[in-house]
Image 1 (tube, rainbow, N blue to C red):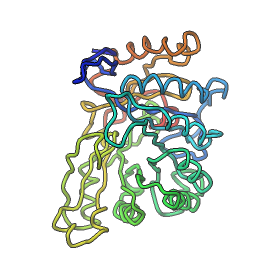
Image 2: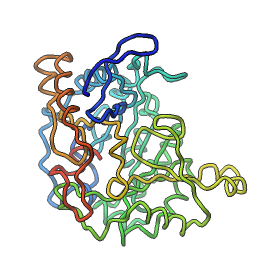
Image 3: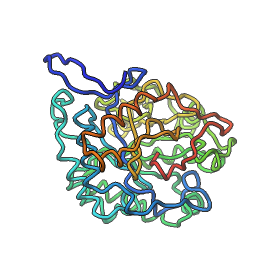
Length: 368
């Protein structure tokens, strides 16, 4: 099945996004740029990448037109990514326009009538932008932070800006953001001794820490197999560093307590939570495990690159050209491209633990 129509309980027909495996798409990730103010080693090759000319990027007007179509097809959340989205000029203006989009009637829930807008950022520009973005309607932030040690940060990010990043995280809290996730790529021999510290750092700020397995992007050029820490080991290391016992959460995707993304969450068991007071209620962490415990069977998302290429899977290079369709035929021309991409979506990615099976594109080109 691809893009088609279904009957609702109210007997109203509406288009929905469903792939060949009957996975329903509710979540759209839109990259705004392939540029970044950091140079993280797992994201950007040593020699950098060939950036696309700025006039080839989707304009904000085109981003909004594309988002309108996907919202009409049942998408409930859009995540803005990069590169680094905050380097794109006038970002709060785009956030305001996206936040104003009304959900399709059948996608609405009590208290939720408009598109949810989220963003992934390195936080380096949040000291200035957190308040304007919050005022524009942004409510969900994923912040990349792989280490709390300044020397290590400069090593992996190739930029010595950890104090600015920490300032940005605090600025987000001060601006009113309540849904903040701290994302850390787990790298053996680099930050595996900091998992507990990263958890405590996030909890102290009302945020949720999450740990991500390294992936062989850029055809494996940035991938060192010995650096991979699998999900089970990540959980074991957190338990060893923090003590106590942990239990898996089984909340429904998209409901309160769990986002639309691929993370699986663990929390301190209820007995320990009762002893720990209010802080114990925040004792939960997530693991994103594409390599050792893949989540392809529940994939609910599509990705759009900064140049308007629609991609069904982070780990594959096949794409459909939404930008050309939009510019040639307007919003009505988008459906054919979406049908083709959904119809070709594979059962699972091709990542292998030895570094094979990754796409040619680097992470910076599609936004994770």
